[in-house]
Image (tube, rainbow, N blue to C red; front, side, top):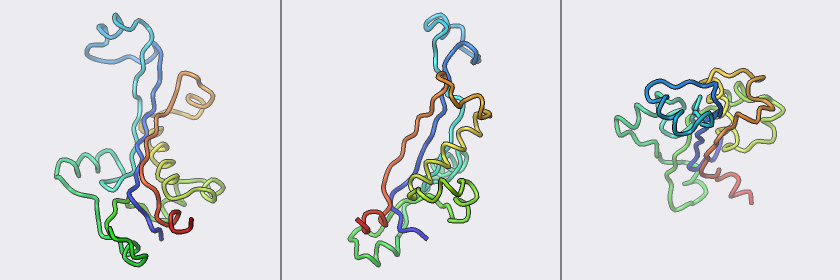
Length: 153
């Protein structure tokens, strides 16, 4: 359903302020930073190694590669015919992304959206806790491009 490429996304949600308490060396951190600190509250991932934190950790522990042969690359005559792409179906993307947003998203934007949505779920945040909140931010990293975008250009 997609040409693909090396793609994946990792999202972190960070919240700053004194209202998040940490175990362990929190006293030391508070002494050094005062009431200003940043805490990662949630993480989400879509990658060729897995689409959850547990799947990716298991793949890394077992030295599993997510790089695979791509029939699409062979079809287009691309010399390198391997790629790493998240294992998400079109159906899964349609279930996870609002239809109006999905219409304008390339494959990598879809991966990024899903990773960020999973980071929000992992953090256990409600929309009112992060929307229009200057003390909450997301950090999103994403790599690769879809070959369909390149070949159409």
